[in-house]
Length: 281
Image (cartoon, rainbow, N blue to C red):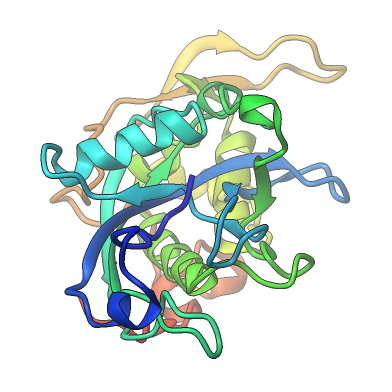
């Protein structure tokens, strides 16, 4: 369940520090879960508790070493399957993190590790497949994306930095309809769609203006179905009809960023500062 490879078992500490860098693959998985305080969805991600040094007992992103017989994506998917039980439909390469000392603890040197990081989005039905306490232990659990590690003495390695960068990337891509769609079921209400944007951007959006802007988004199509079971008039269900690819469509952003932020879905680029990872791609 470790994300960074410790190197050949026969090498001592000083020898490991002089070995060529090893390659690892890690994944940041975002899903929506209700906030215990507000009841509205917030961004969460699964983490794995490390069972050996370095950083034994601390939470880390799921991952592991790159093998000689697997592609990067195959390694990412196998690691997720083995550690969390998840098989996300949306999986995209995020960045390469290769800081010189990212695998070290204070006063201890280790083999340098370069991590190829992926990020994934899971729908509620996919998120339910996560087996917390997988393997009879409590080594896999969901954590709030914005606060993970704050109450546990920090995350292992540079994983808090990696999560912050993944959050920045998500907020910059959420303006494209196919990104929000990966957090929802096959059909959804406009309120559920708005809650996805609010959870990702971290702020409330004006419901009337949100509905007005959606009228210009051809990929969001109204169905003849309604969500039953509430005390009020049942809301109409919608579906996403655009391409499932994780990349922006050629038609450009579905939401305008030219109007005042208080009344629109403001452009994430103008609202979210770049976390500037210390390692190079």
